[in-house]
Structure formats: structure tokens, C-alpha cells
Length: 395
Ligand SMILES: [Zn+2]
Image (tube, rainbow, N blue to C red):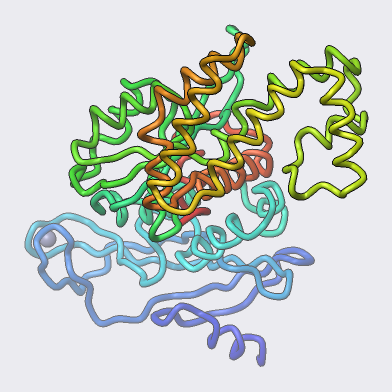
């Protein structure tokens, strides 16, 4: 029987084929048995040769050319001569009490990470949802444990993204992502963004004093958390968030003039960096600005921010920032005054960028990855599973 010989080669090492049965059109059952002269008692490690009884165990294996394969193992149960207990023989490649082989479990785990969603894995391997979820997250957890005690890196970034909606309160729940800038990987992800939650989620990682630099957006809550949690850390305010501080004011003033039309040509001209504008556009823009002095003032403040980030070196940037803050604080527009105050409050963190050149862009890129993970699964109910999934996808 050639099929019998063929299957022998694909089988687990200890098993011998008795016969192959085609149970249904695409389901094969391979009846197998283990050969050994004795087995060792798991309770007292005595060799035992007396077979107490035998029983059939049905175990699912990796499918072969779209055929489902089951191993029907005739397992022997031995009686130990020393402690008189009865035990079942172990088989290499099949875990105790498992209903699938270890290689199928590995295959499932690989597929869960490769396929777009777990439903497809379920269909391809024709296994139950519960089994997939259980084995997949068990494998992920094992992997996560290897990383668990890696100490804090030197440069990190912190940012949050929406995780799920709380239906009762109608509010969004947040997840906070911590990225290692040097290794370009996600270090940890925590449910929520309050100090207490961050503390609980990050306390297990050793070596807080390692952290020297932290990039954050301009959020006071993260600022105070970093100051309390990392004794040696210095904060860098994210460049792109600083540049974006003025956009709402600029839009508000524009809408006051042109109405709320996103397609209006003025919108693009205002938001784009002046040096990137065409000559004709620049003239057109100046025409608008000269007509509306308030808009012009806000626009000049925006360009002031760009000028700041064009500076080379800490000292020049410092001069530029001082000049900008001065101008903003003298302004009669209340939004600009407020911007001046914000810049003053964050000036140390803003200027630190010019010494180290780190931004939070990577953290935000990983935020996007995390959101893709959510979408692929049509959302997560359990944050624990979501965390494992993000960590495995971004490490
Ligand atoms: Zn024993």
C-alpha cells in the first residue's frame, strides 16, 4: 500500500502506521501506534513494561493537500510496578491532553499572523474558533514573556490612540503606546492614559533610570507623568505638534472670511509652507492677507513657527523662539496670546529638539499600525489580547 508508506514519512517520529482509512471524501484517518519496550512512570520515574489497557485517541494533524488528517493513536496505558498508578504513554509532538499536534498549533499561529483575520484561518484548517483563539494567544503570550524583563531603553516616545468605544458612556477608551526609538520597535502598550493606569502598566519594566529622552506631543498629563516616572529623562516636544498648534486658529479666521469650504483655494495656500508656494499663488495670497489684517497676523505667526524649525543649532533656535513668543504676547488676538503662553510653558521641551533631533513620528506610525490591527480583527473586546497582538506585530 503506497499511501501507507508515504504517510509514514510525514508522521511524527515515534509512530508506526497500522492502516490508513478514508473516513469521508476529504478526511483521512491514520491509525498509528507507538513502539517502545518500556515507559517511565511520571510519578516516580520507574520503568514499566506492564500494559494496563489501550485506548484510541483522535488527534488532528496538519492538513495534507486540502485533505483533513486525523491521527488515531492507540495509546497504551501502563501500570507502574512501584507506585501502582496507571499512566498513559507520552507521544513526541503531541502535548498531554491536547487534541491537535504541536505542529498544527505552530501552523495555526503562523497563519493567524499572516492571514487578514482569524475567520479565514478557521475555514482553511477547519478548526473551531475557540481552539484557534486559545492556541494563538497562548503562543503570543509565550513570546511576550521573553521580552517582559527587558529593561527600559534610552530614548522612547509616548503617544495615545483610540482603542474602543464605551457604549454606556459614549466615550472613547484610549491605549497608550510606548516606542523604543533606537530599536524602532514598540516596547509596551497600556490601556488608558491616566497616570494611575500608566503606572500600573509600566511598573514591571526594570531600569527606569536608563531613560534619557522622551518624545511626547504637547500634553501636560504626559509631561508630568514622565517627570515623576523617569528620574533621568528629558522631554522633547514633538515638532509636528508644535507646528500644528496654530492650524485651528488659521482655519477659524479663514472660515470667517470665505465660509466653511474645504475646497477653497485660500485654505491650501494658507496651510502650505510659504516657500513651497508658486510665485502666482504667493501674490494672490498676499492680496488676501493685505485685505484682512487679522488673518495676516495669524499667518505670520504660522510662518514664524516654520522659521523656528528651520534654525540650525540650539542657540539660533532659542533666539528665534524668544522673538516669536515676544511678538505673540503683544498681539491683540486672544488665540495668539494663548499660543504665546503655550510656547513659553513648553519652551525648554521645544528647544531640546534642536539638540537631539528626535520627533514623535515613529510613535505615530506605530499608532497607525495598531489601528490596522484593530480593523483587521473588526475591533477587540479584550485589551489583553489586543496588547499581545500589537506587541507581536510591532516587535
Ligand atoms: Zn510510579
